[in-house]
Length: 275
Image (tube, rainbow, N blue to C red; front, side):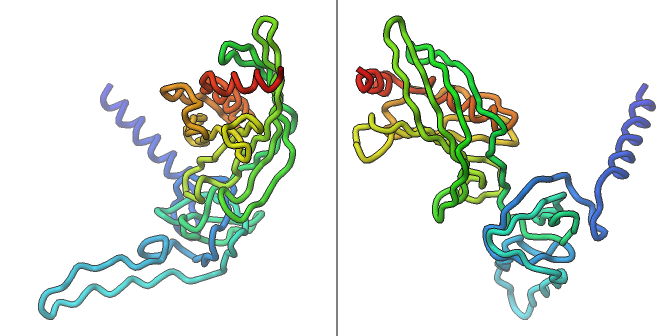
């Protein structure tokens, strides 16, 4: 039995080695998707030496006549990405990502110069229902377009979210702007994207919306509540994250998690506004 397990493990390891993709003689770890250059960055023929950011590592102090080791030569530069340029990643080696444009494989780019992006468009509207705050609510989410901003998350997918809520004879409806960042949070390497749902005209500050902020983690496949303004309008204790396998389910879960996280104050303000 032990011999059979060892033979099977060896066969699997050989199959993996044969299946592992290679580029320019480098074995790649599996990573894929669309990425955006967050700064101008060189494209190298092979993974570079040292830290991906290009900042040299500090060396410890040397004693006597001991000389520090000579730096390793860097890989040949074969091109350059400009800030805001989009590429497709098809693998990684350490802190370097293998990139292509269309079918042309360009080379390796430092991972900290690229941010994973997603497409927030919806092929059709999303409809669902949620019980929250003592109300039964139906909702519809529609894609409205895309906005590029100079600060904050950079590129946003815009939506309108319509809600119709009832409890006994009490009924009211409201519509809110909603957005999802299409660039990873703070341009970081992890595919985590901010979602916000803003309710206008009910917050203590008339110039500011009541805003609920959530994060969609594409790797984990979930949506989690982050915070809100005012924060004391939320229930005590954060609700558990909800499973979400794609953009559409992330938006639906974000809408339901938002309403489920509200304390009494936003519900009272909405009901009062509709009287």
